[in-house]
Amino acid sequence: MKTNQPASSAAPQHAPRASSAGGVALRDILLTGLAPAIWGSTYLVTSEWLPPGQPLLSGVIRALPAGLAMLAFGRALPQGSWWWRAAVLGVLNIGFFQAMLFIAAYRLPGGVAATVGAIQPLIVVALAWAWLGARPRNAAWLAGVGGLLGVALLVLGPAARLDAIGVAAAAAGAVSMAVGTVLTRRWQPPVSPLVLTAWQLCAGGLFLLPFALALEPLPGQFTLANWLGYAWLSIVGAGFSYALWFRGVGRMPSSAVSALGLLSPVSATVLGFLVLGQALTPVQAAGALLVLASVWLGQRAAVPAAMARARTA
Image (cartoon, rainbow, N blue to C red; front, side, top):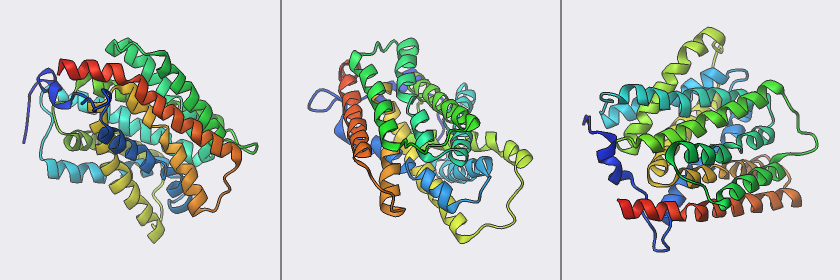
């Protein structure tokens, strides 16, 4: 199915739906929040099951196979201006972001990378104000700052190792996905989340491929653990989770979606506790509660915007 339908005419399909409480539908929050909860496994899988020193190749394997499979299933190519728009979104949300994510994951402890990445909700709030005219409430800023502090309490320890390249990569990745999230909301893609995800995964994977081939030597062999790690990151961590994420971006205010991204470090900490036997201190528990409170506050701050868009639709 191919379409050249303009984005404006498709907007009502993706307009946020009000819940009975007048805000964003609870189902949309839960489904969208599942994506960052899955992404929290990235640091565990990277450190335990992927071959060392392969951030660009890991990004390609995570994105491109899943994108091609979804593109074959959806059987819809971009039309008109959506060729370059899909390419831009694919680079921002997938290609460049994945490269920065894996560079940070290889060079930093997961806690440091997650803390730097937690600046994303604040960036999204500012960009949505500038580009979408979505004037943020004070609660949105408070949720962003609270989430950043909560993540720092949750994952930073006295032995946290700082690496300048890793910190810069984590910050660049957060900026890249924040811009991509707001642009996705602004352009309102006239296709299903599955098709939009396929376009972006393919564009992002193809963007990374030449850099991976030119800059990284291919591993001599892949172990079973490597294959299982890549399979998880590609099938569940890319295809499934990104489809849920972009579905939420199309239905929810940008600030509400970005606040849900704070669930990723919470998930990473829980997995470290359950899988690796890492201790959970009272300070970390307090940080997790502060993150969850910030996520809740971020959803409450988006209620007026969701109600206005629902009335317009």
